[in-house]
Length: 119
Image (cartoon, rainbow, N blue to C red; front, side, top):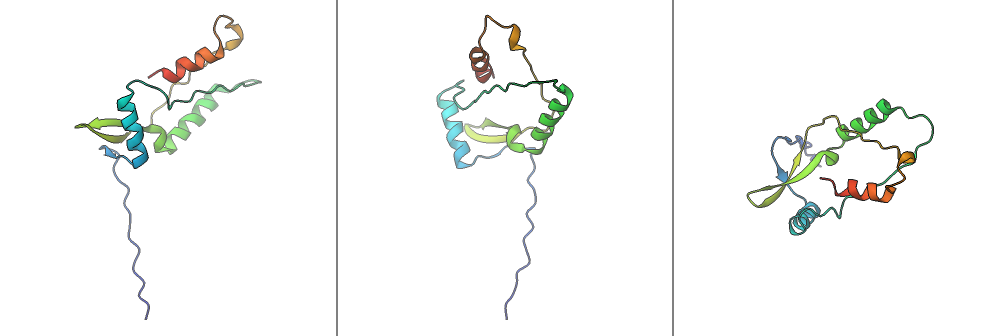
């Protein structure tokens, strides 16, 4: 006779307290501590849009994306010298836009570099 075990219920953890880092996150946290204020893992990109932009729809879509994916709201903190992950609650994100057609004095690469290093 084959006995089938009842499935274990996995309860979601609370996001109220810092959680242990994965091995990959530990490596990133260590490098961040070693190279303080280095933005080597930030990647800034620009997208050329044509036509009329519905800013409210774009902001709403980005906010919904961030709300659904905890990894986009996770930051690393140090708790007694140990790296931990803290998941922030969903909140409206600021959407900055710049019309580059009138910006002859500054290049797109300069803007992207500044955005990637901004804390």
